[in-house]
Image (tube, rainbow, N blue to C red; front, side, top):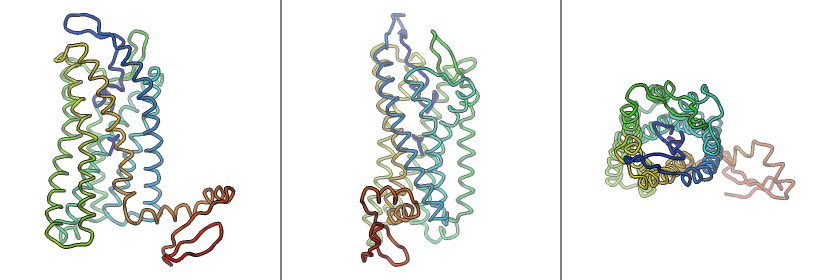
Length: 358
């Protein structure tokens, strides 16, 4: 979900994998001062932006779901869990933002907890996007079976399974992450026992497989079957449904594929398969750019899966209607807020109380 919007095994930039100086195969120093300076400005600013947007957007989704939707369907359950996953994901970003500017000052305990929370949010967010694809597949392709399968109870059970898998897959991060001081600079990163290259290769491949290949394969299958089913029937909403499907798949692919590809190349550099200094620098810059796309996806999840729904604007108006603060502020500014009334199908202007027919 963001994957959500990952730490060392997922995103080596978070753990200061760029040193001030690294060494290639000829043992000549590879100075990366420019990369480190770029990271301190770029990543710290971007983390703060994603944190604010993700916090506001996903919190609004949760409020609307709990207040108006009441979790009456499997889709509502998945939407709620996706929003929670994205909130977990963005919760850790202020810590990594400060880490990018300076160093890790939060101690060994928080290093383990924040790294673990971050990865749990990443995995669970991706998995819930995959579950929502399966949910749509059942609703459209197997409509009769979906009447029995798409219940709140099954939605809760499948959500618990997803959380269990995400937590289990993230346990190595909780175990191995440590606050380490190297050359008078403290970082938060995994410290693997024994052959660290094998551990890092295993962790990176796990991210690529669980975080991209499996979800993407499931989404492509589900949405290809959905499109084929929709094209066979005549419906006024067919074109809109097909467009939404393409948006979901294309956005997921564009935002996450570059990041996973560069992450794998970064692993090859870290394990010694790529040793040229300039290539190493280019990968450092590339992973920051692709990370920007991947992290921003957790801010788009509310838009893609909820904000574009037909009833969302109505629920937001009702939410603000029941909140005194927006009304007070608008009255002081001489502005008016228009709300939608479900019972009458009319709009009301708060400052005047005049009713406008829908």
